[in-house]
Length: 574
Image 1: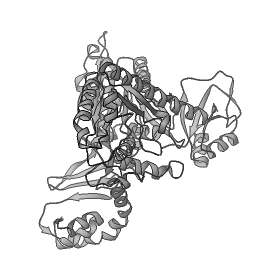
Image 2: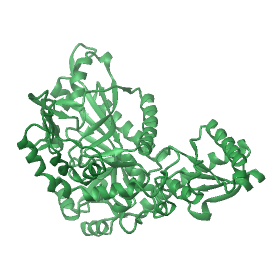
Image 3: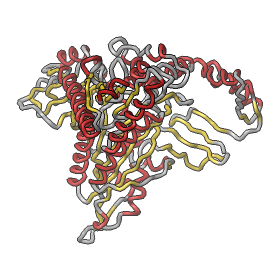
C-alpha cells in the first residue's frame, strides 16, 4: 500500500509504492552504506511505479549522498573501539573518545556509539536504540510504572494515527504543534478523505475516548497512562535528546474540579523530581514554566530542569494543568451529584528517552558512560584473570560462586569470561559502558579468598579496593555498600557542579554576562512576554522555570527594575 508522510506545509518526506519496476540505478540515491553493501554482493532493489519515477529518484542521489557520509563515519566509529566483538583489537578499544572539554558535542556522539547505546536510523533524524540503551529505558519504565500504580494510574494504549480535525478542535494546540506534524495522506493506494496525524502527543485522541467513558461524577477521577512512540518533525536532531521519533510515557487524568487538576499536575512533577534525584542521581530544579514556554493548550506547565556537563539546561520531564480547554473542545463532561452537566478538568504528564541523554550528559566522563547503579542494566561486572590453563577451573569456580551470591541478593551482575580479550581490554570496555563496579578475580585472589573491586566513578587507584572478602555474605554486603556509595557520589558531584554554575543576577547586563560565560542566571522577574522574547533573541537563553523553591525576598526584576514577586532562571538549553 502506498503511504505518504508529509510535513504540515505539504512537502513529501517519503513514499512507499507498489512494486512494478526495479531500478538498480536508484541504489545511488540511498547513500554510500547501501551502495557499499551492493558492491559486496548484497542485492538492493528499489521499487518504482514508472521509468520516469525511477529517473526522478536517481536524480536525488547527490542530495542524499551529501548528507550521508558524516553519519556513516559516526556509525563506523561506533562499530569498533569498545564494542567487545570478536576480532576487535585491544588497541582499538583503548582509543577512547574525544575529551568533553575539547568538543562536548563530538564527545557525546562518540560515547553514544561506542557504549553501544544507539545508532542512526535510515531516515534522517531517527535513531535505533540498541539493546544496552533499551535496557536503561526498561529500568526507567520499571521504576516509573511502579510509582504510577501507587498513584492509581492504569496503563492503556491509544492509536498512533489521529484525525487532523481532532487537533484543529483546540486552536492553541494545533498552532503549537503545526510545524512538527507528520501527516499520512494516502492509504491502500488512494487519497484519504482526511489527513491523519502521526501521533505528536495524545491529548486529542484520549479526550475523544474520555468523552465516551466519563458519564458521571462516579467515573472520576480517571487516570490513564500509555507507553508509546511519538513523532515530531525536528530540524536539528541529537540521539536521545531530540529525534523525529522517540519513546515516552504520557499520562492523562480527568477530575471534577480545577483544584484537583492543579494538585495532580504538581504531584506528578514532584514524582518526576524524586525519580530524577533518587534513581538517575540527576539534581533538578522543579518549577513553573512561563506562559511563553508552556505546553500548547495548557493553563500551566511544570517542569524539572537539569544542568548538563556543558552547563546547558535539559527539560527532563513536564506536567501540564490543561484546565477544561480540551474538555470544551471534545465535550468531555460528567453529571455531578446535583444532576448538572459539568466539564472535567485535566492534567497530563510525560517523560521520554530524553532522560537517557540527560544521564549521559550529567555523569559521563572522558572514559565514557557513568551509570547510576539504580538504573544500570549491569551493576557489577566480574572479570576473571587467567594466565595459565591450570588457573581456569579454580578461578571460574570462584567467579561463579560470587556471581550466584550477588544475583541471589538482587544485584544485576555479569561475568565477562570471554578469553579472546585481555583483562585490560575488558576494563576499558566496561568503563565505556558505565558499569558502576568492576570485580577482578585471579589465581592469587582465589588462594587468599579475597578479590579486588573498582568503582567506575573514581578512576585509577583511588577507586580500587584490595582484599575484599570472597565469602558470599561479606562479598554481597561489600557490593551493596559500594553501589550505594557510587549512587550518592554521582548525585553529590552533579549537585556541586550545578550549584557552582548558577549565578545570581540583578540586572540584564549581568544576565547577559552570566549566559555568555555559559552559566545559568537566576534573578527577580516581573518581565513581559516581550521582555522574555528579547532575552531569547539577544542571548539565546530561555526562561527555564520559576522555581517552586524561592529565595527570601524582596526581589527586583532584572529587566525592568520594578518589584518582583518571584525569581526565575534563564539558561541556554537543549
